[in-house]
Length: 421
Image (cartoon, rainbow, N blue to C red; front, side, top):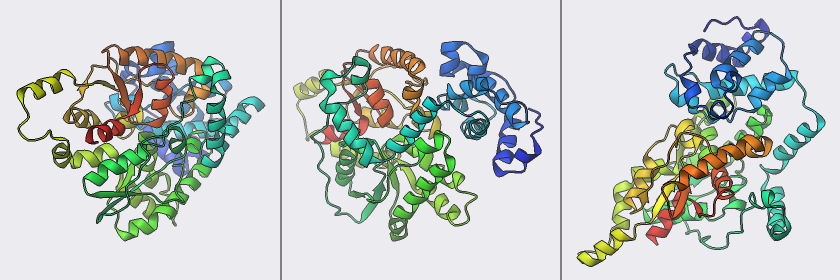
């Protein structure tokens, strides 16, 4: 694609990056086939190709309108288009740049501004989010059905965390909302890794990865969260931890890109690049230990034919929802499925598994109508194989999907932990 970016923009690092990405796009339209919003709305401007055109117009100095912002707001940033694109267009990075510029030119009305400010203030801060969540859980019985579906029931079991006792050590990001919404996920991860001779520890001063703030167009504030986590992790990095483990693939997608987002910061660039190198989704960690994991889950020696038949007949059927951040952001496909199969679960077929569930960070709050339609489609697809349970790899997807189904929705690491126990 030919470009003629405005000089004031082109001279900045963001402008140079945007120019390079735009020139990669050949407008072939393959992305429209896998874009969730285009599938729903059928509007070219609600496809990656259309949004790229809108962002090109903005970057070339043309008028920025509320219509431009509307179509960028509707984007889930699911990055399915990146998986589909034969030219390797880095759409996710481009839309971050485009949204930031559009936000500066088209101010939001007071209600929208207040809503986004509240999300930026509450979600990344557990000390604010947790008491609000607990209040909602206590009053759940009187809440409207739509709001009740968004508030999970409290988790009170499975919180035991093994004491560090192994020479092999890995860090884990505790995150911001996950410890309140599903506090059993990281302890389950620690128990699974403990059985494999790996101690999982957390840096208490680390917190939100920065994704909520960054993707709500307060990008420098988002980078401050990144710097805080780097400072919190750095003593352990210097002490030789093997990896920084992500149990929420949404967080992992951003942490994997810390090196990119802080590349222009002379104080943090090298450290951020090292953090990105150490970042591992828990599926990558366990897949590397798959042989040992399979040994830990193996049945007792010389099982009888009747016990084998009974085990086969009672295999729990699981529908795995691969979050967009896992399959499109981190480009990890098939690892979780392989681990669940090795653990003795039967995986059901999920139609259109590449499509987003509609959670997408704060999207389900800011775009409830589109998010609800995507959720209904996703739940129908997940339930089509008549599973006993649904598994996923990201806290946002977990709570969002649970609001649309009576089936239990769990992080897949909890299923492995239960199997090992």
